[in-house]
Each structure stands twice: as structure tokens, then as C-alpha cells.
Image (tube, rainbow, N blue to C red; front, side, top):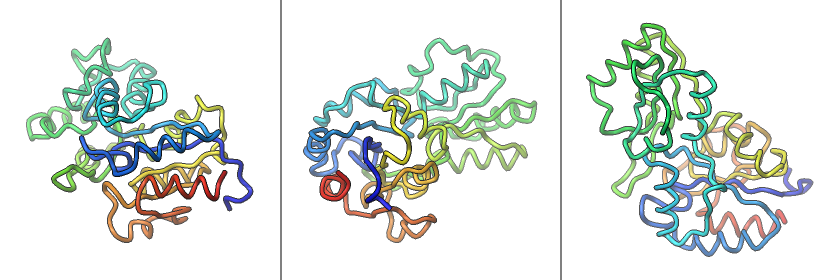
Length: 259
């Protein structure tokens, strides 16, 4: 399957793949340097909604990753694009650290609900406000629907269960903008000028990273760091192109077999 492909771009997940909170995956910085020494273009795609793109970039730089702002495509960016397209005033259920990415968006008298990872806001009173807006016809926009993610203290609930609760209570369906949506991957690839069949995705989420990428025609590599759990690779069809221990091992495979 891969042998006939000319690999031109690599999309890399961030949280769980290159780092877990403020700790880098061992060897990830050096592996990224090795990947950059080739002819492929590298882009970073993330569903992270608990901090702004600026804060995320600062975190990565502190961890000694050589990454620039224009190489990162986030689900927050995709959500803002949709808000502007629909011209709605959102109730922003996002972490306060993510609010800078929505600067200039009108939020008074909201007529839409936008939900990301917002642990401090996921309580009954706020969710009930969102519920009532949705009952009145406001659209529900989910930045992503990840079931869980990896923190240093273990796995933690993602926004997906809360999005699903609001969908269930109001008989509505959320518009999802982050991974694994096809448009997210296509938008992330647009700056490379590459077609999906010329790209590969590396991530720790079998459904959102690998499954989403493979659904648009990319190859997908699942790494056993971050949120990975045993037998995750069996949860999607087709199975990942490759399952390996970590990002450095994924880079090793690309260098040895795909270039």
C-alpha cells in the first residue's frame, strides 16, 4: 500500500505524541530534527482546546521543540473559522486559557454553543444554560468529541461525553470541527499543497488521529504513548498502517521505508 506512494508531508499530533503536558516524549525532539532533515513537509495538528495557540507554542518551545506558529493547525482555529462563517454569537464553553484565540468574537446575548475541553466550566449550572440555548434553536458546535486524553496523573475525560450529553438532552447533533473530521485534515494539508495520498499522520488516538486521517486517504501511524491503550489498533477499520512504540520509532520507519 505504501510502496507506491511518494511521501511529501507528515502530520504530527502534539499532546500524547510529542509531549504529555510539560514533559516531552523521550527522544521526540531529536526525532523531529531527523524528520526535518528530509524533503518532507511537517505540520502539527491538534485538538487541544485547553490553551491558546500562543500558549501552546510557548509550551513546545520550553520543551525544546523546533516548531513555528504557522506550522500548527488547531481545532480552535477551525472553530473560529466556522463561527465567523456562520456569523453567530457563541457561548464559549472553553478553558479560559483558550479565549485569546476567540479575541474579537462577539459573545454577548449568545445564539450558539461552542464546547471544547473546559473542566472548570463543566458543572450543572453552565451546562444547563447551554441546554436551554440549544432548546431555543441555537446550533451546537463541538471543537472535538474526544472521549478522553492523557494527563501526567492519568487519563481524564475529554469534551466528548459532555457534547454527547447535550446532544442527547436536546435531540440535536453537534457540528464537529476538529479531528477526526475530514475537513480538518484537508485544511491542515492545504498549506503543504499535498494530496492526502502523499501524506501520513502520526498520533496516539486510534479514532481521531489515525482513523480520521485514513478516512481521507492518508496513511496513519498509531503510537503507544499518551492515551494509547492495549488493543486500540483493533478499534478501527481499516487498521492503522503501522502501530509502534513512540514518535521516534514512527520517524525511524518513515526514514527507512517511506522515503
